[in-house]
Image 1: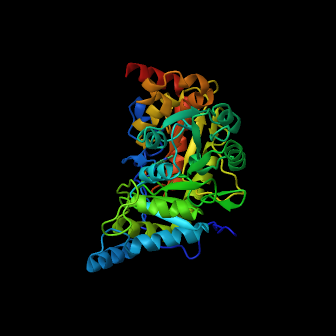
Image 2: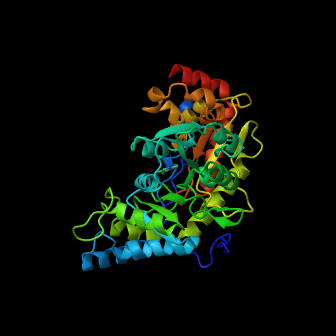
Image 3: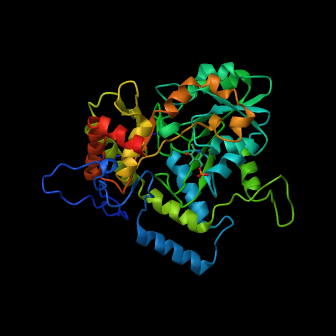
Length: 426
Ligand SMILES: *Cc1c(COP(=O)(O)O)cnc(C)c1O
């Protein structure tokens, strides 16, 4: 199946509801700018966020919402939910798509549908929802280390953690960079385990030329407002497995098979029509969102090039990516400031960079108390979660802002001694 290619900027560019460029500090008339942490004015008058929502064509969305109000079909497998599901499955070329009210319930449904019990192996270096969805159903999350380069599950470490109680593996395509799917599929096959992927970051991304959505027993997406493609809140399970899809469809709606018959333990995981309308509208602008993310990633790469100890996490140019995260690794043995010191400098200047996914699930409750020894097996996770910083991108940020963000970082490193003194003073 051929994967859709993204042009530099799609032509014609779909109309977007773009955020006005964030007003930067007024021109200082040639005087050198002072870092806000050292008493200067912030580099940006308003905060620059990681994951400020992308909004597609506002008029199209409003028209869909009007029609929804006219028909009074607000939820329960309505026309927009069906259309959104069809558009997603067509986009990926997968047989089944079930949309849900959020990504976490999509994970919970998929886990129960695949009968994950006992122990399940997953990375600790992920958003906490991946672990919570398991623990919520009394399944034990067994945290596995990630590869220091790819930031995804290390297949050899996965195999070492398999026990007689293991029923499945959950890979996370972190930052939209895919897992070693072939190695994980091989392990799952040999040990008769279920394989699920948390693809919350990876809608529209490919692995060896195949779009995400085709790997393992099922894959799960999140369309939360902060993800590059959003339906306000939302998620989806995609799979080629007919039986699983049928079961999940019933479980999503309390297990109802008719007006008065219930066949499974179910829950309410339905997506509303207004969310589906937003999802469809977002999907119509996906090429523009990706093109802007890619432009921003390239701008950061140019602006941050040559700073010793700073590495921008790259995307494989031979794959299709969504470029939704601009993530850098700050090596404290080379950089004059640590990641946490740099974070405080950036926040003072209104650049709200984020420490994704600090401190790692195993250092959060309830896992910290339940599995106090987990960290011993997770050296790469612990190192990465102390070094990684996600920078603002998306349709609210452009090259002008990025140049200024990079300027703050360079200046912070150049004035590291003064910065450290200021931080020590509080
Ligand atoms: C966003 C996210 C989720 C959960 O998605 P929600 O839609 O917010 O419930 C799960 N896993 C990862 C890795 C995520 O980034």
